Length: 315
Ligand code: SIN
Image (cartoon, rainbow, N blue to C red):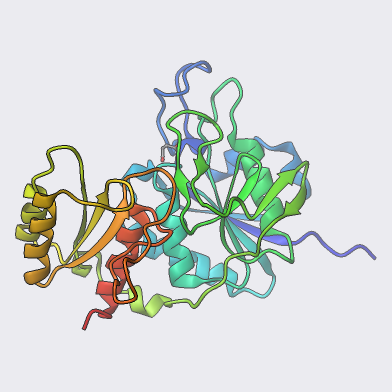
């Protein structure tokens, strides 16, 4: 007897993958998150052979992603992953903050089953949308017994969240930046795997339950020619408890920005050093340096610092 297809739950949050424009040739002037999840599934005939459940968690442009939506999403993912009959979960999302959501979910849930985020660069109404193939690949990965942890399946590759970056504003191959490369390539439903699936220790839902307005404020400041540190002082004055500085090159900062960061530290503000470069880590200067972002992009370093402050590991 043939074993049944694995059950995959699709959670929709919006994004370009669910976007529509007035014309099929318009790939920039569209409304993200306009289509329901059943419509996305219906656009992929090959998905009719799969066992799927679908649920809408949000219908937003991911530029508007926020803590409350993250909490709701993490709760729904945890619920479905805990169901014995569910093999894995797919999340449809916008590309703009995908790397932050993927990183957040891996830190909070570190699921033993596959949780696969996917997205699209072209709206569903485009002449040749990229969403349907990405969704099919994501469902295939979520149903694989060997897959685990939070991954991003996009343009024929599966990536771990750590260090992943959106690296292009328009092209359909929009993700990269992790020095290790993708976990796997997906070719016609088959997978060629190069690296291990993400693992880690879950922080757990109870530790992120505080209301969004009680979460510590963490801002990002950039180093650039002429940077004078004024934005660091403004962030501290606005109540920031953490600052991520996206420095030049290997996380360097101008003399005046450095001075402002020193004032912030003196005021009890935690600082993380990341880079404004598209690729590469910021490594610790010595064994006592706890401020280097490592592989994390500046936006992921912001999430990490916010979680650390929320959990009170700075005391
Ligand atoms: C969004 O992030 O929701 C809009 C852009 C996209 O999905 O590519």
